[in-house]
Image 1 (tube, rainbow, N blue to C red):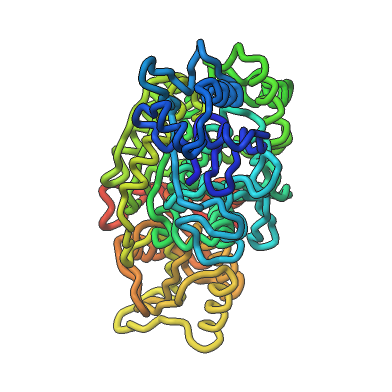
Image 2: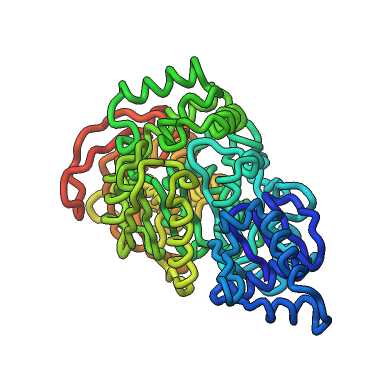
Length: 561
């Protein structure tokens, strides 16, 4: 059994206690007393019970037991007057009163994969919370295309959980701050957690071009594969919620559930005006790495000098000033409003009522637009989940939701970007305008190059689906270059996939958009433009159009050459 409380981890199999991952020196009888109290934490343990268990019938003085209790308290930084962890019940015995989470019989045995682990070798090897004498779990690298994504796996719970970080992150630096380490260990008490630094931040590869959501979803899949997670819940914190939500909609077969904390659908929930965003840019240019931004993220921690020092280091390690500005410019283009109704997976939205950074309405909108989402609003002003008096309540709410959520079957519905390719405009009595011979081969080559799905013929050309809108647009431009003058329409929405077919409103909308394109033109819906932040793809406004099946006129955009 492994028990977690505050900064401590007690492993009854390895017979050791660690604080913030560091193994503590302790006499065996002292640790025996602590384990006995932890195992019986819901009741009073009498002196005689402890004497019988520790000394197994040998005659010892009462003072010997009192000495061991005192040593346990000293080990935990407690004493007889504070009684923070061990309360003396006069005339009866002792009771452990700390907030304890326990999980996994024998989960920390060397070489044994914890509950919930996948079958991948990387997952089994990285399963322990603290794989060595260091304070940190082992940092590894998953390969996503040509990019190396830094990740860690820790915890021994029955649920696989991917933690998508916020704006910037540094997975090693997390463990240097006791509050953060305690919060993460609390997640690890009920889940096997894989957390990572997004490309361009922290320990992951720095990249010359800002990554879009397509690449970021690829990174999540790479981390899941490396950790041995065939399926996992995904928890998105702050800006990481946008990535988590898009991943859950696009890859429901790999997403058991979705948890969003302090997240948003539209950027104006974060910075409602250009002036407020400019203030952040000014801070990044002049004071990045100083930690002076802490009150903007966790006002209750603003006077804690040690935390401020750690936060300044977090800024410096998380991203360079230039990368931070570029990331915020990308974030300013995020709008997930149109795709929220396509999320099928069981969803939990957690938000603090007076979150100083992300307006609470941002969380309420997420919960309102995601079908069947559960919404939990907690008190507090801090945006950082590990700050504030109810930080551990966030993990407890997530635990209760995830542990009680049954396996999810996504069926054949997914969020996809549909590419409709019309090679020739229909005329009277002319029904079959599909490209033949080398034209079809060129289209197939482009779709395969950009990892599209099956090429499906229709009465005016072809359809193809993609799991990322930026890839679909790059494929569309490649097809224009290969064929010369096709009409291409692109829309992102929910589709139903079947062998040799694709159905749904998104298919009809992409086809109708293609019909409005000029020869050699790629025309896209507003939904597509909202999802390709950071891709570098430029658009030209093509005006509002009536699309059959849409409740109102849709603004369309032409992809710039």
